[in-house]
Image (cartoon, rainbow, N blue to C red; front, side, top):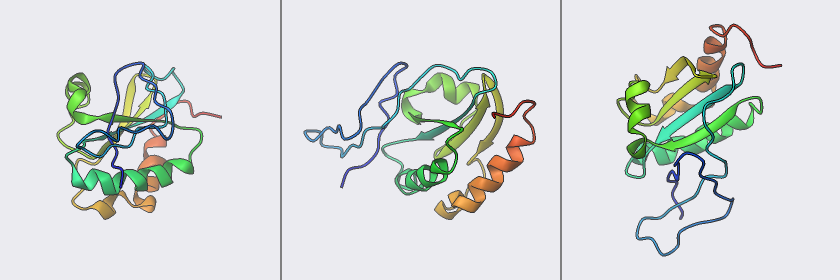
Length: 141
């Protein structure tokens, strides 16, 4: 089985299917580019996880399924341990964690009060996202 880890240096690009078979830690690479901030009016959800976080390995596929229903969102997956500036900027105190951005403006965070993996179920993520959209001045078309 291949686990997920962030190869999230700014500008990093990883192709689907690439993996690190020689590593002692099972790894699954992300299938997206890690850009800078989203442009104003472009919504971005940042998912923070960690290799050592067992719940993250269960939550990430749940977030992937939810994200598939939202092609209007830019989804960025990042490694909590390598993103010290983000931890400070977004006041991240644990993982898994989601941060919704409109450009560089933080709209909402999800995960602070999560107590179990099921707190990341599709219907809960959808409720969080729809609630957060009400705080955005301009929504994507």
